Amino acid sequence: MTAENSGTQPKTESHDPDFPQAFLSFMRQGWREDPLTVAPLPEVPNYAKRRAALSEAFPGETLIIPSGNEKVRANDTDYHFRPGSDFFYLTGDHDPDSVLILHPSGSGHDAVLYTRQRNSKDTDRFFRDRNGELWVGRTHTLAEKSTELGLPAAALHDLGPALAGAAPGRTRVLRGLDPHVDRAVLPYEPDRSRLRDRELTHVISELKLVKDEWEIAQLQAAVDATVRGFEDVARILPADRSVKERLLEGVFGLRARHDGNDVGYASIVGAGPHATILHWVRNNGVTVPGELLLMDMGVEGHNLYTADVTRTVPVNGVFTPLQRQVYDIVHASQEAGMDAIRPGVVFRDVHKVCMRVLAEGLHDLGLLPVGVDQAMADDSTVYRRWTLHGFGHMLGIDVHDCSAARNETYREGELKEGFVLTVEPGLYFQPEDELVPEELRGVGIRIEDDVLVTADGCRNLSAGLPRSSGEVEQWLAAQREAGPRLPG
Image (cartoon, rainbow, N blue to C red):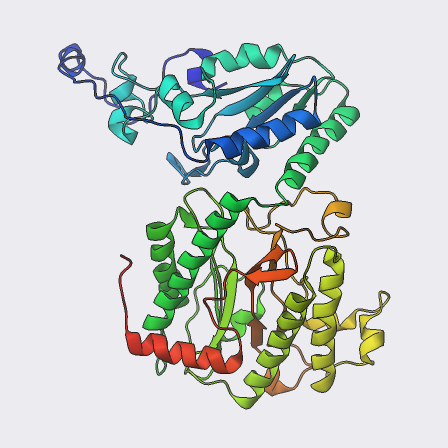
């Protein structure tokens, strides 16, 4: 366990000074205590409802869900901490090292959040420990955190006994987030326990599939901020000279940090042939007038719900005839996918609708070695050479939300009202692909939007950004005319 858990002294770094007694005595006096004004968060009932649903799924069992630990970036510096999505979904707590335990009781479960105690001025830790308040600012007492989250909070040093008291064979753990917890709760029967723990991840993911009104509002806010971020980028993108991909990444990142928590994932800014690399995150290239620019970016809101939007624009403001032809194929595929989405439609069938339009477009370009039907056949799928990924994925508190849901409820399952998913077909012609004409090599196009499944179809949450080729050109021109702006 950590020093705090084990009751040992806080870790000191090699560069920590050996403080003289006079300094220590001086630091221990003359401090005013300023209490925090805290109130229950408005979304507390949402988290309680989710814990109740999880409790109902596993009566009589102990459920252990950690937030995760801080990760070292280099030497003694850490990455910015983001709590595990499932933990946050059930608690709303942002802090590292916390652990939610649902203890079985006669009425279902009693939820307790085991979390760090405040490094107050009662001990020297407030100025000596790197988690002390002179280093990181005022932190919550257990009572303050309990009030804010509507959840009983216990000191982290009480976690050890709580884990030790978990009944073998009646305990499930969300593993892989906190090695201390994983070591403390050993599998009772390894194979059987792995299946039991996996079932916990399945159930949480499946609870997350249908979004309630509050969650939809969170996603819409993240999408709206993302639209503003794309506008910010378009306003500083020159039509007549090159700029670095990282400049564009940074401008969007400013919007994400100003309007939300951060970016929801590493921004993809692919200029020219970099647009053909599906997860291009190095962003060390430059834009070139006459080429295309693919940007896949999303703002993560303060409650960790994220947008995921992609636009492909002509750097100089106007598509060439060939660029427009490919772009229009991708747009038609996306339109067909959106038109197919409604409750009761199988997720995989939306994929087939989008892919058929892409295959037909590839056939019109003269690229398919066989007919469209044969290219689409399960024992062929040769069209996928130029579109490796599926049509989309679930979206929510993760960019790839509900990823642990079972196939029969996700990929092979039916869409339901309240699902939020992306629709993101694309075509990518690699620079070294000798099976396509030279003028197509290095062209990559993806259009991605975030849609809510409604009672009779779907609603495009990211409709604030245009999608058709002509509208994209008009939008880009309008943003450039408006000129640069700072978030405000």
